[in-house]
Length: 136
Image 1 (cartoon, one colour):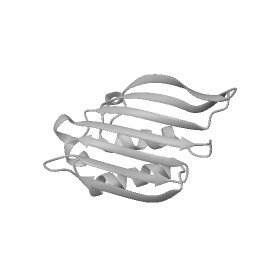
Image 2: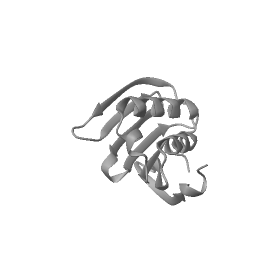
Image 3: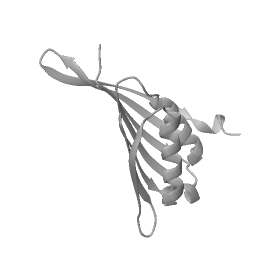
């Protein structure tokens, strides 16, 4: 079953508020994550909300990485979408979650663009990660 792209939707909890509330730190982490995932970075934009929270996007040749943060809840919504198979999105996600200090993540992997005769569909696989066990 061939797919055009892989879309990862991540619900991350227990993140460090001082990190996820800082747009410059978020930019550094997502750009580094894209590099870890062997993605070709094109541009990025990050915005700080008042009184708190950050939204950002990294456009990569393969598609994009986006993030929205709620420091007051220690929560992050992270999306990574890549087309093709030349990059490593799960490695990028692992790096980003570690840098955010997350303690838990619920991940959904959506295989998008699966051709079924003359229409396209997708499949979804989900899993949970208890990141407290992997933190030093």
